[in-house]
Image (cartoon, rainbow, N blue to C red; front, top):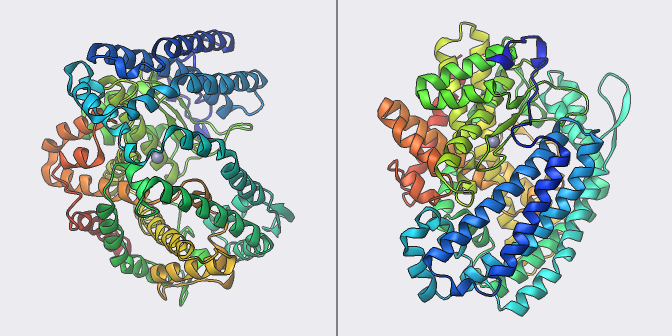
Length: 594
Ligand SMILES: [Zn+2]
C-alpha cells in the first residue's frame, strides 16, 4: 500500500497520480482534437438518418457514441481533477477553456442523435430495442424515450431553446446576489466580512454564542436581498409552469419524477411516511437539549458537536474502511485496495486545493479517482467510506456496462455511498474501544440522517406550496415564501427547536430551488433505500452479498424500481418506507441510550 505509508498528520503527502488518465496537457489537447473530429464524422454520417438504421447499424452507432463519450470524459476529468487540487495551475486553466469549448462543440455535433431517436415512432423503435444486438444498452434506449409524450414540434422546441438564456439570467442574478452577500461578523478573532457559506460553517463549532450570533448575522445580511431573491424565484417558477402546461405535465413534480424514473405515487407515499415520523427527530432534539443543559434547543444548536471522539489519522481510517469492506466482500475489498495502491486518492488538504470531497468516475474505460480533505476527524473517516462507496459503484458498473449505460439513475447514486458508511458504522459500533468515539459517531450519523431524510423532504413540501400558490395566481413574494417556509419547518421541528425570527428567510439562499426543482427528495430516497438494504444484509448475511454486487454492476442498465425490486423492495408498497425509517428509529434509541 505505497500511498498510505506516510502517516503524518492530515494525510500529509497523499496525492494522486493522474498519469493513467492522460500523460500531460499537450496530450489532452491532441486527444480532444481527435475526439471532436470523430464527433464531426459521426454527425456527417448519421444526421437525418437515425430512422434508417437497422439493429446492427444502431449497435454500431451506439458503440461509436460510447467511444466518443469515453474520450471526452477522460480529457474533461483530467482537466477538472487538475483544477481541483490547484486553482493556480495556469496550464490547467488554459486547457479548461479549450476543453469547455470542445465539449460544447462535440455536444452540438452529437445532440441530433438522441433527438432523432426520441422522435421515432414506436412502430420503428420497438423492434430495434428488442433486437439482441442492442441488448446492453436497451434500458438506455428505452428510458431516453420516456420524455417523448412531452416533446413539442421541432420549431416550438427551437423557440424554447432560444429562450433558455432568459432563464439562466434569473439563475445568474440569484447566484450573483447570494455570492455577493457579506456580513460583518466577529468570530472572536476580529470582525471581518463573511460570506453566506462562511456564516453557515460556524454552525458546526463548539462555541454556542458564536453559533447563535453567526445565524443572526446571516439573517440580517439576507434581509435586504430577499425581494430580489424571491423575484428570481417567482420568475423561474412562472416560466416552468408555462412550459409544464405546453408540454402536458399534470403536476410541477412530474418532470422530476420522470427524470428520476419514479412513479409520482411512490414518491408521495415516501414523503408522507417520512412526515409521519418527524416525531423521532423531535425526540432527539429534546434529548440533545437536555445533554446541553438547555430547556429547548436553539436552531443554532442543531448540528452543534457534542464531543468529537478520538482523532482518526488517514492510515487508520483507510485500514478501518478496508477492514469493514473486506468483511462484506473480497471483491469490493480488492477494488478499494486498488484505489489506494494505484494512487487514485488525493487526501492531503493544502492551499489552492478545493474543499470537500468527491469521487469522479473519470470514464468507463478508466478507473475512479477520489478527492478528500482529510483532517483526522471521525467525520473524515466516514467521508473516506462514502467516497469509496461511490468508487465501488463506478468500478463495478464500468466493468459490466457501456459508457452509455454505466451511470445509475439519480435516485440510486447515493445508495452505495451511504451503504459503505453503514458498513463502517456497524464495525465501529461493535469494535471501537473508545466509548466517546462510538457515542460521537452515533450522534453524527443520526444528525446527518435527519438532515438528509427529514429536512430534504420538508424542502420539497415547501416547493410544492410555492408552485401551488403560483398556479393559483399568487405572486411568490418574500413574505409569502417565508410563510410557507415557516409553516413547513414548524411541522418538522414542532416545539422541540426554537426557531429564531430571522429564520423565516431561510429559504432565500438555497440554490436547489432555483437550479433543479424538487431535486432534494432523491437524497431522502437513497438514504432510506440504503438503510433498508442494510437491514436486509443484517437478516440475510452472506446471501445478500451476491445480489448487492449485481446491483452495483447494473449501474444505469435498469430503473430504480427494477434494481430495488431485485431485493424484494416494492416501491409501490407504501409500507416499504417503514423499514428504513425503523432503522433510523433504532439509531435514535442508540443515541438516547449512550
Ligand atoms: Zn455522495
